[in-house]
Image 1 (spheres, one colour):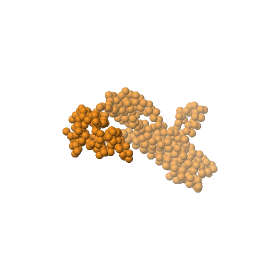
Image 2 (cartoon, rainbow, N blue to C red):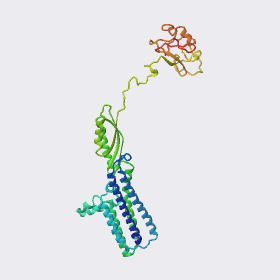
Image 3 (cartoon, rainbow, N blue to C red):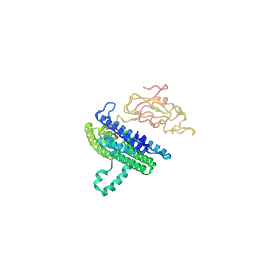
Image 4 (cartoon, one colour):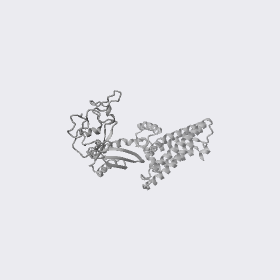
Length: 411
């Protein structure tokens, strides 16, 4: 009502800070409610993120109000209305008193933590430079101005000072445009003060790792990796659960002979100094010594069954073979894959009987006699036909083999 009666947009911008103070009181009530609540199955990590969400919403609303003031101020530059100063100065001191009382009389844990943990605003940096110059002349003021002032108190004092300057210039020279300039200055100060807090609380909501603890976490993880029995630390993830509360999870691979409970106790003891809510997954090394039974052996040599089918040379191509070199007689045919009639790609299977363990040799006569006739001449029996046959690649096969005309196994 006072802003409407004075027609001052600068006082309206300063009133938005009062609305922000009301939101900070609501955040303080949420903080006390969170302290009384305990974790539930639905919210296993507790309700601390409600504080973060309240701070983020309050700061974002304050920035939206500042953007609204900037838009209205641009419109007022085109057509500047007359400002009534009757309640301008009174409204300034009432708002300043309410803002300082709200920020200094109540211990607001969420905003106190955010104001210290977030990066400094441009207003704080400029005031810090000015404070160093003043403290160089008057050292007793270092406890008040250094290392940096409370951003909320700073913006309340700066806004009130801008309104006092506006009141004096309008009363002396009727310079109404200074009211619009003061509104823009208050809006910029509000946006610059709230933006770092919004960024910090937004990163907490996104479960990112705080930058100021990354070095300490790396040091603790290196210490954990050197513990007795620990082989590897992987899948580590640490994030800020709430203001001042760090949560994390990590997987630890240990030796097969290590004590799981002992390693878990040591890892938790090391990380608990920094991470209050910690989940550690311990699992033993899955490396297994290879045994003979687990090594794949071709054709299952160790576990031969009664019948095994192996590829044999094609008998249909026997008419085209040279009796001396076992190579194709026609130059137009493709070259053989192996010499001495050893099995290639296009071969037919032959059934083997696993009843003999003594190796036998196999010889082939000169000519193109069929395979069953070769066995009928006794060349498959040891000592017979060895002088007439050629050595083949099947001399060391640990079975007696052969087929009749119908492909049935020979006894």
